[in-house]
Image (cartoon, rainbow, N blue to C red; front, top):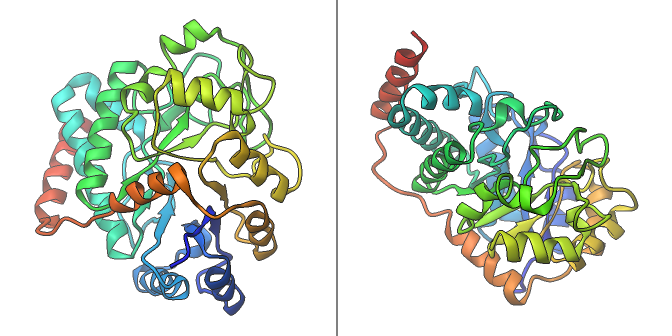
Length: 338
């Protein structure tokens, strides 16, 4: 079988169109990412993920952003609401043991939700360290306000996802917590010194550098480069691969975000040339997916090896007692809320 293209693309709606099916078959992107526009109910979603895999002829990873809190694509009434990172962090401040356990159980339940509908990778947890005066795009999504808290909680979140057969994606490497603008709207420029960043923002990523996948921050780290790290080979090499020591699969954040300028084909080429393994494009417009595919390349070498490792993380564990896990999770959450 031919190796897939180095991209993840979105889809337009709740059903796979014939044109999208043909694109998936012919272009063979490495993965697909789903959003709220693709979600109606569990039955519909199981059919959609099955049709995606049928079109591609393989058991591809299917991604979603299901952090909990305000970033949760599967929502009530068909799926239970999950706490935000800040909710877990508040519990952790009162009791690290209960905080870790609640975070593990919450993400184990999320993994079960996702596997039941054919989704095998979650773009979580968030490892960004919030800083005073930063844009609120991270804020309550963060798992704490100190490096140690974030690392402890992120380990619990990743364990919960992976024990349920869902591959985690840590984000936004090397750290988005100082951004004073939302990278969906503009390019953040982080002016802190390298020493400051290495002693704070980079540390959660360094301490979880064995994660299978990471998503870039569309931000300039001005001590190192004038370009966003997603398209800067110097920054990717010196900061992510060397200083942080991350050697897993590196995907871009959404190439549609306003932090990056230019044509999608060119943005894809620049990100891959800089050293990203996978280009992520989320609009769901087929014309955009075609542009990304034109800029992508067949996965090979170390990038292909990383992709295979990531694929292998999505192994389902049998024997999960959902009822018991939900009961314990509810008790922990209600105890800490009272």
